[in-house]
Image 1 (tube, rainbow, N blue to C red):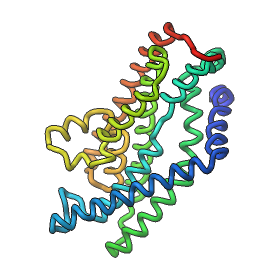
Image 2: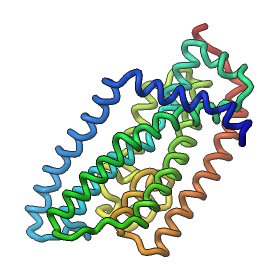
Image 3: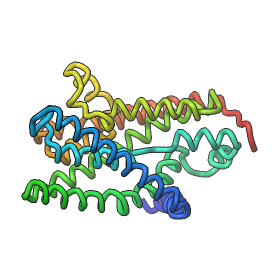
Length: 272
C-alpha cells in the first residue's frame, strides 16, 4: 500500500493542481452545467403542466428537479477525459515520456483524474445536495433525506466512475490506430449522454428498450446512482444494479487490457 501511495500519489496531486490552476475553466464548466439544468427544468415543467397531473411516468415534478440536477452532477463527476488525453499525448509525442515511467499507464491516468474528481465532489456535488434537500424540504414540507441512500449513492458513483474511466480508456487506445480522436470523442460523448439516461430518464423509454439499456454499462454511469438517491429502487434492485456495475467494471478492465496489448504494438507519434 505504501509503495502504491508513493508511486501514484504525485499523479493524484497533479490532478488537483491542474483543476485549481484553471479555476475559470472549472467555473465555466459548473455554470454551463447549471444553465443546462435550468433549461431542462423549464422544459420538464411544461411537460408536467401539459400532462395535467401531479405525476408523470412515476416522477413528481420535485423528483424530476432532483433527477435533473443530480444526473448532471453525476455526469460531471463520472466524466473521464482519458480518451482525449491519450489522443493529445499521441499527437504531441508526450506519450513516450509516460510509457518510460516505472508505473502502469492506465493507473497513472486513473490517479491523475481522481485528484480532479475529489475536488469536484467537495466543491460541486456536496453543496448541490445540500441545496436540493433544502428545496425538497420547502416544497414537500418533509425532510426526506436518507443517509443510507446517500452513502449508497456515493458508492454507486465510485463504481460509475470506474466504468466510465475504463470505457474511455479503451476508446482512447483507438488513438494508437487513427491518431486523432477529436471527432470520435464528440460522437462518443453524445451517444453515452443519451444512453446513460442523463438526458431522458430511462423510465420514460419503451419497456423493451429500457430493459436493454438498464443492463448496458451506460445506465450504470449516471442513471443508477441517481435512482438510488431518489429511493426509486428496492433493496433487492439496488443490489442488482450495483452488481451490474461491478460486472461491467470487471468486463471493461479485461477489455482495456486486451485492447492495450494490441494498441501498444501500433504506437507511432506525430510530434516529439
